[in-house]
Each structure stands twice: as C-alpha cells, then as structure tokens.
Length: 87
Image (cartoon, rainbow, N blue to C red; front, top):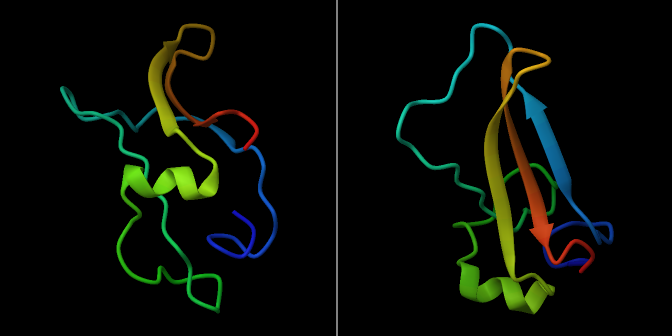
C-alpha cells in the first residue's frame, strides 16, 4: 500500500471500538468498511472508494468487520481487520 493509499507503508490494520453507553448500532444493518485513496494533503479522499476487486493490487483479500456485545463492559463493540493480517 506504500504510496498508493497511505503515505507510509502499512502492513497490518486492526481497529477495535467500544461504543459509549448512549450509542448503539442500527438494527438489521451490516458494517461496511471502505478504502479510499487520499489526495496529496493526506486528509481528503481522492475519488470514490476502491472496489473489492482492486484490493488485490494492495495485497489484500478483504476487510473483515465484526460486531459483538462485550458483556464485561456492557457495551456494543465493532472491529475491523485486514485479510491477510500482514499484507
């Protein structure tokens, strides 16, 4: 992904998020993860999201998203991880 999507080389992405007590997922919806190429300012998206067929150029198969209930924290959690883990 070096210089294609991110200015630095990226080899593994894993994001976990625990929702606050006042935030919940909308029922019967799927999580969606997208990859965008950034403009030179590294802030704004440069066009539309890449389609999954373009992931192979980056060494990716897929972006894996999950949602689950954390009974210890009593909160909803979501996660995103790359497939493969190291690409």
